[in-house]
Every structure is written in structure tokens, then in C-alpha cells.
Length: 386
Ligand SMILES: *Cc1c(COP(=O)(O)O)cnc(C)c1O
Image 1 (cartoon, rainbow, N blue to C red):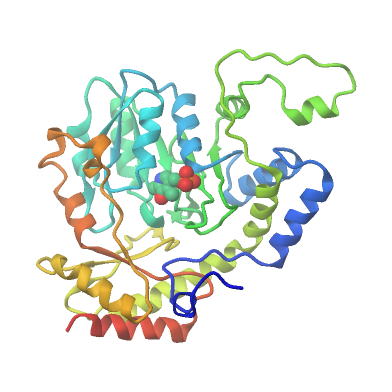
Image 2: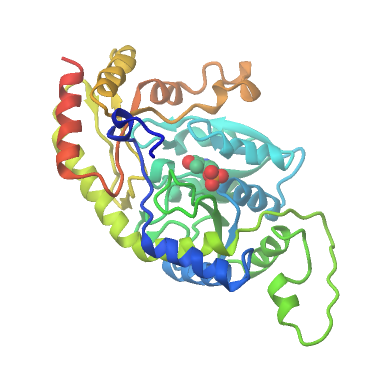
């Protein structure tokens, strides 16, 4: 018996993962293999992920949050350091900076792309700044060339929060063939590719990859696979404080299957996004997404923005859509408005962030969304405010 009432189960959600019989079989195979935690499937997922992205090293972890945490540690960010990041992001972006004892410094965004505004970066830099944590928000790549040039001028590391950006491209390369020191991905069900929970770090630097592999596994000098396949007795050492941030082989098995489906996921999302944009472009009270030349969006989310003066209508529009069984979400959050991050310091320096968070509206977009469902959403949206 379904737990959902018919009304709820027939509603169009904002997002829905696509998981099929292949994923089910892949998990069953792992369960029957007798090796369920990080093992051969994780190693295979890492190798395939690295090959797909076009990067030498990929290190699987338990989430993007733990990926960011380890990434910052591997870059030597610690107590007393400042890390610049956008406030217009999921709270985990800033939390990871706090986990390593550093302080997030919020920089405003470019309202056209919802990403860090390179023109506002330098004013956020202080003698304590150690790194810039760039977010490719909802899958649109940030202005990496401009940001990297500023980082190089000031001797700062650049780490990419690519939680939403699998399959997105910047000047012909996939995000994660890192332009910065390393890039961190999420496989949460709300993202384009899911393993239930999970994350991946890509880097060009073999030493960094090696350190990340140790840190995710209690800083143990030998991996479980190495210990189990050894023909001599082995003794591992623990030379620093590590973590248990491992991915399981069950998750990796799902990830391997999802990676095969990814080109199809991306094509479908892009085609749905184009249908939205061409139909909504002419609505005078709404702004459709902008994709600067040289960048390719994966449309992890499709977010529109209400024009100035219409922000106050957002809840009415959302309520009207919900009455028609269409779920929507308010825009990306602004981290500086949440209790742990509230400060006088952010009072007037993040105007574009505040505008974006107050006026954005995320529309349903997922692999199984049909053209007729999308037409219904578009018509309902056109009528939701008139
Ligand atoms: C989802 C998300 C995260 C967190 O990812 P998890 O895998 O759930 O830890 C971090 N940053 C951004 C920008 C995200 O969208």
C-alpha cells in the first residue's frame, strides 16, 4: 500500500532521481559479493569517473560536504585562515570552511549567473585569505578565468564546489578537470547523478589524491583492499587524525550505473530547459536563465527570477501552482541569513545575493518529466500571475 495519498502521488515534484533495474541489480550483486564497504566497486567508480571527467585522480567520499572538508584540509586551510565563498549557496559550502577552523568571507554574486562576481572578489581579500571556494551554482560554471587570475595575483588556492555541476562545461572542458586545485561533487538524490549519498573529489595532483585517500579512511597507511589482498602480514600506521568519510561499494555500484546513464540525463535536462526558456522568455514578470558564451549548463536546477517589484508575489505564485499539483521551490538560500552566519558585517555588502534569494523560483525538472507535464507547468505558470 502506498503511503502517499493519490493527490500527493500524482503531484509533479521539483526533482526526482532516476533509478532503474540496473541500479537494483548492481546493489544486489554487491550484497551477494560479501564486500559491502569501500572496496573494488569504489575503485572502479573512481577510475570511470576520472576517465569521464578527463582528470588524473578521483577520490570517492561519503558526500560533497565531506569532500569539501577534506579538500580544504588537503590544501592546508586551517584555523586563522579566511576562505572567500558565495553566500548564495547551500549551507554546506560555508560549513566545510568552519569544520577546518577557518572563517568564511562572503562575496556577492553576479545576478546574471548566480555565481561569484569576479569584480567583487578583491575587496573580500585580506592578509588572512587562504583560498577561494568557487561554487558552480545549480550547474552553471562560474567565471573561472577571471577568478583564477585574481587568485594567482594574490597567491590564493582555488577549490571548486561542483556539487551540482557534473557534466557542466567551461570552455570545452568538463567541470572537475580541475581549473582550480580540486573540485568536489555531490551524488545526493537532488543532484543530476545519485548514489543515495556520496561525493567525489577530482584533482590533477597525485600527492593530494594520496592524502585525500588516507584522510577519508582514518588516515590509515594501508587501504582495506591492500590489507585483504596482501600475501604477507601487514601493519598499518595512523600518522595523523583522519576521518571515516568512506563511500560504500553499494553506493559505488549505483554510481557506476548512473555514470553510464549520464549522457542521457544531460541531454534530457538540456532539452527540457530549452523548452522552458523558449516558452517563458516573453513573460514580462519573469527572467529566464542566462548562460554566458563558453559555458554549458547541466540544469541541475532550472531557476527563474521574478523581475524587480514582483518578489512579493512569489509565495502567491508558488501557492497557485501547488493548488494545481505543481511543486516549486524558493531560490537558492543565502547562508548569511542563517543563525550561525548572521553578522553586521554582511549587512549591506551582499545586495545581489539578497535579490537572487528573494526573487528566484525553481521549477520542476527531472529525467522522467514528460513534454505534456511540462506544457501543463508552463501554462499554469503563465496563469499563476495575471
Ligand atoms: C548539495 C550541495 C552540497 C552538499 O552536498 P552533499 O553531498 O549533500 O553533502 C554542497 N554544496 C552545494 C552547492 C550543494 O548544492
